[in-house]
Length: 232
Ligand SMILES: NC(=O)c1ccc[n+]([C@@H]2O[C@H](COP(=O)([O-])OP(=O)(O)OC[C@H]3O[C@@H](n4cnc5c(N)ncnc54)[C@H](OP(=O)(O)O)[C@@H]3O)[C@@H](O)[C@H]2O)c1
Image (cartoon, rainbow, N blue to C red; front, side, top):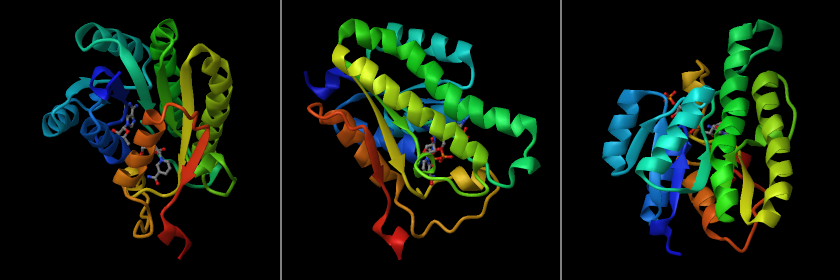
């Protein structure tokens, strides 16, 4: 089956890795559904990329189930899901508010699980498809000042690995992508000033995601990558 018959939904696609992934997948011939939580940004990015756009807040169970059902009705059955939406939180753990902690867990962790929960039954029924979870190198090591973000991603590392084993025999690939620093809005949106000159570009990250989706003979379990400049 050609990529044009394959519909892939990308979350958090109004910026950074998500937006670049939409553009890269579209160039590879996929039928791409762009989603994001901000209606104005969704409309603008969908128009700019020539894709269908849907407002979707991954931290809301209702939004996840409703939008997936609407997309499958209006665009067609999904073949792929890229769980990309995520937010950053940095600082000593005791300085965070409970609301900050909840927000990171609900977006990065629960959002990935809820979206997978909404999409997976269709993939399993059709015995075909792929899920790529955008995790982070923060789920591969431990360091100070990122306890909540890291915890939110370590949880997804376990979730992804277990689902990989559960779904592979049923014809569905569930994979984890673990990028190092990416030159996106993520740190600035969290009020953190970070020098991203040594980071990989969102387009580089998107290229890796596209490869994971497209090379179907492989189950890309723990794919990590960072800019070579990151070691300078
Ligand atoms: N940047 C890095 O160095 C880095 C490294 C490793 C992994 N990652 C991961 O890469 C992924 C993409 O991040 P990025 O670097 O591209 O950051 P980004 O430029 O800030 O993009 C994040 C996207 O997620 C959206 N989003 C946030 N909360 C959402 C929610 N509840 N529902 C739906 N969409 C939501 C944002 O929408 P708004 O524009 O409306 O906020 C934005 O479109 C994240 O999972 C992040 O953890 C990033």
